[in-house]
Length: 396
Image 1 (cartoon, rainbow, N blue to C red):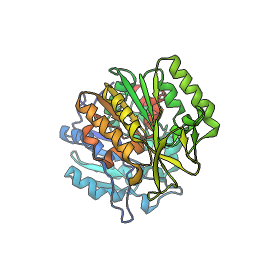
Image 2 (image 1 turned 180 degrees about the vertical axis):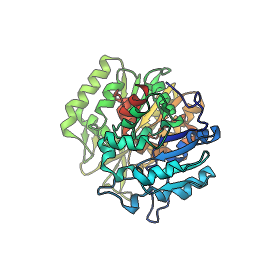
Image 3 (image 1 turned 90 degrees about the vertical axis):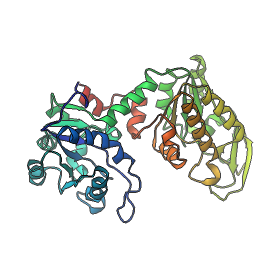
């Protein structure tokens, strides 16, 4: 398989699938350009080799063809500034407009195509649409981990038209290496920190992790389903009653396999789901009626910090509480700080999943962990042990 470093892009037009699905405000200003910045090394390598770059991406979820609020034209100015290159824009991603823009593209130039999802054929993985995209470049580079779990035209099918000259971009290669370092070649002890609202959304991941980790730390709303499954009284806390037996089965499976699962000992409870709610710290198994758990408590923070400190590899997916509310962010921040400290002491830490990434950025700790993944659903499916179509299309 070709890699970015082993390939010379001199004289080549590189068709790159990037993930520029970034948030925009009401004035179409980019509010978080992390995903764009993540693709810069790939783009810069091609330009420095003497090649030209054709970028394709989706933005948002347009339903009925072109809509200005989902147009990638809103990204051109910022991308031009980041690259110090005047980025050109094609008002379509296929057809005469795109082909003409590609034909006249000179080496050293960058062309951004219009939103792929303005065409229904993109998400359908249409072969004819893929062939039109393939016409635009000499070599195909997939640098979009965030969409690698989708068998879409631009992420998977288009690769078939480049039997030889196809490869991962730097960002996607680094994502794969980082996740594989946790899932396949971890230094021990390996600790997975799983948070978020629901057990149901994490069952497959936890089940897969039990076969490869030493410790699983659980926090967030999902912890109250575990507490109730063990006979605890959790007041008005979020509980998935349909998954009580599942939670018990997970705990039993972990015990059989020698995996230690840590559940919150104490909880910061509120009398309403509100930042200004009255608060109290209580035993997680004895939350009063009318109160609901919204964060892990101080004793739990200490326990979790000790486990994290003793770990050599750390995976964090999901917050410990409602960190969006200042009154209930302390537990999530404490875990983030513990991970940063462990990383400083030599541990490898991978932060993945939208809320964990949002938290690590909120607390300005992204530079103090080993790797922050750009993939949400793709990362979760990869951690579940699934083969991602976008990765298989390159690896074969």
